[in-house]
Amino acid sequence: MSYSVQQLANLAGVSVRTLHYYDQIGLLKPSTVKSNGYRYYSEKELLKLQQILFFRELEFSLEDIKKIMSSPSFDMKEALLDQRELIELRKKRLSRLVKTIDKTLLKLNHKITMQDDELYGNFSKEEMDKYTEEARQKWGNTEAFKQSQERVKKMGKEGLKKVMEEGKKLTLELADALKAGEDPKSDKVQKLIARHYDGLRAFYEPNFEMYRGLAEMYVADPRFKANYEKVAVGLAEYLRDGMIYYADTNEKK
Image 1 (cartoon, helix red, strand yellow):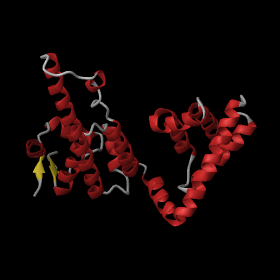
Image 2 (image 1 turned 90 degrees about the vertical axis):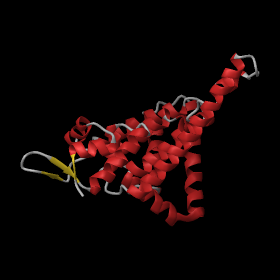
Image 3 (image 1 turned 180 degrees about the horizontal axis):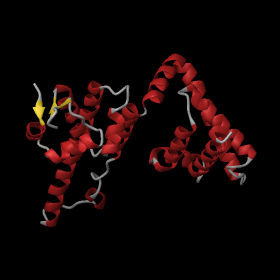
Image 4 (image 1 turned 30 degrees about the horizontal axis):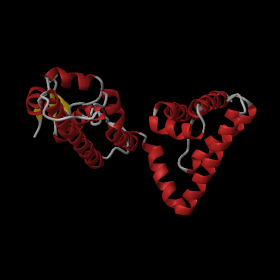
């Protein structure tokens, strides 16, 4: 069965203008366009629209949704399972927030006492943000993600342990360079960065664009930054600066 724009808008609870806009930006194209310009959507587009609405519910941008869904390795069944998990996490978080509201009302009515940290303890989205980022990498960072899965499987536990130990050793050497006041653009540090870049090949084939993105993530993502800050204060920024300089310099060669 096919649906006109108006019929699909009524069915999905969105506006006709929204569907026209999704068509305009290449996010959701109709299956057929009649000679009179009327758009019609088949089951394939209905399922795709459902995906878009789930992603929007989870606060993904239209740009991210388009990138994820246009990936050759995008798997709708896998995405639905992840979306279900994310919605469950959101449901649990909202349930905890409702309990916090109820307790706060009781506190204001002088019926209970609350510790100060209880006022804010349930506002954190850390668990959901972590799962969202992992799912985003699975959906969007397609080729690198697939390569990483395959290579980790091939290297086995001992191989992975060796790679991780080499990574820790390199991190300590970078921390020593930071403490010694070495410029991240210096030859000494750039040789360490070259080892870092080559080390990624244990998981996937990097390119300079990806490497810059990884560099920024080391600082922007609190989990990555915290891991480096445990080794040496300022190490995340130091590594980022060295990585970006390495990418910029070697891309020109």
